[in-house]
Length: 250
Ligand code: DGL
Image (cartoon, rainbow, N blue to C red; front, side, top):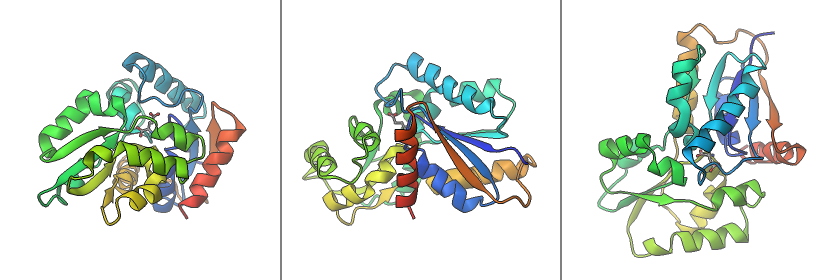
């Protein structure tokens, strides 16, 4: 049996990245860990985010993973650099897809929806310097809780997003960057509120990067049939929700 790839997130959001990775790497076996007990990470202190992220990493390292995919923008911003400097296995992270979104700007604004931590850490400041012309950071506080509660596509989400975007009612929005992996699951609700506005995420790019790194390191699995297994610090209620959300992506 070849070694699995470890994927983790603060909760169920990273399932959206797993979906893309399964599509691109059908021979790989993935272990997905959601730290639902401690989600959301976004409003927490840097110290707490790092401690909880280390917990996710320890869980997966015990299961002999060959690479780590941080399916969480928040944990990547807070801790990926430290992980890369201490671990000897490949660590693949994420960042809000501001670069591809910036190409869609035609005089209006690009809203970058992400967690409080992601938008306030150094990594995002550097990204804004490079591609941030006309970009407006929007903290999505509260969205993760609704998604974790199984309400990604619900009247509660519609009402929540209506209020969150009210300040931009008279703004020309050229694109919205989904800078948190949980937000993939609110695409339907967002499109109801902002019909025709492109919603941009970096999931495919992240999965491609994972494949490139595995190839480079000679870690791609040979002929085994791929698959996945879900784990959660929050118990079965959440692994069931992960299954439902994965299926909802087709
Ligand atoms: N899904 C995560 C992200 O991509 C974190 C959400 C949270 O726990 O606040 O940022």
